[in-house]
Length: 279
Image (cartoon, rainbow, N blue to C red; front, side):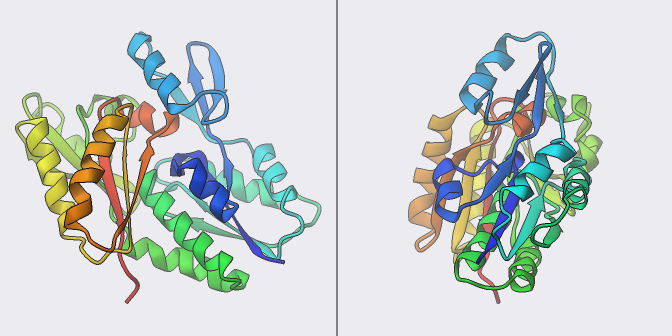
């Protein structure tokens, strides 16, 4: 028996990694033009950003149902234990649904819950680290401890074209201090203790990406770094290609930020998330 990892679709992990580590991903729901669509199941990143460009209304996201988590845990009945790692509780009620889903079971393996205090790239990095430890055959307390320890080794920094999507989606956090003052600049934001915070302001997108590269270069020695964007895979690939010679020995993982994150980040966002080496 092994320890299994459950997470939610805001982790935005590439399908190859999900398959490699046997990770269970429970999708959030996108409410879009009167439809309820499961993130990554009924609508993918490319389809979402095409619709977003044409839609007059901003989609909304909702956390997975209690029943969807119950089904996910029941499907792992043969596991030794489950570590369920989710988007920051300051950004979503997903972890609450997960705990209720586990409590509603008649039995099954024990579940350890982890509030990642991150979203998207940061959540994905923590999930992959926990899955790596689980794959080595460690027990439930060890895998859960590894997930919690990894939180302190992750950072997320991203360029966003505008703060408007974060504002309208109610996820702007401390970056609200910039509202009304960033009309002619490109903001960079980070995630700190589960909420969006200001990181830097620059005049052009080119300079914003340069600033992102400068930050990434300070992370030399990190074994893993995620690089992802919203609806612009060519820009993600270009950033990864730029970073590769600057970060020898770092595994760069490219991905797309999917619908549940894209609702709040908006099109044109581009970010990095390093997972630093354990001390």
